[in-house]
Every structure is written in C-alpha cells, then in structure tokens.
Length: 69
Image (cartoon, rainbow, N blue to C red; front, side):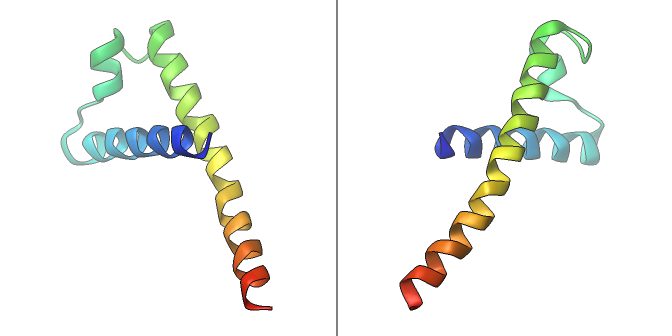
C-alpha cells in the first residue's frame, strides 16, 4: 500500500509541477477535462494517497526511535 500511495503522490506532484510551470494539467488532458468523472477519481486517489503518506512520516520516526534505544 505504501508503494501505491507513493506512486500516486509522485503523479500528483508531477501534475502540479506541470500546472505551475506550464499551465498544463496532464491528468485532465488524459482523462477528459478537470471535471470529467475519471479525472476526479484520479484527483481523489492522489489526495487519499497524500493522506496515507502522512503516516509514513510518523512511522519513520517511531522506527528510528526503536532502533536507537
């Protein structure tokens, strides 16, 4: 699950980079516009993956503390 979340977060980051630098929304282009159902599903999955990835921060700290004590 962590790998899937990381891939989706990377896709989201690259898409936001394209929007910021060039005004080009790759997800919307591939899936029929920003309001198309498939685009909205991709956006939602990227958002959920971002929330899941927050847990990686806390799990990393807990594992680091466990290894040093």
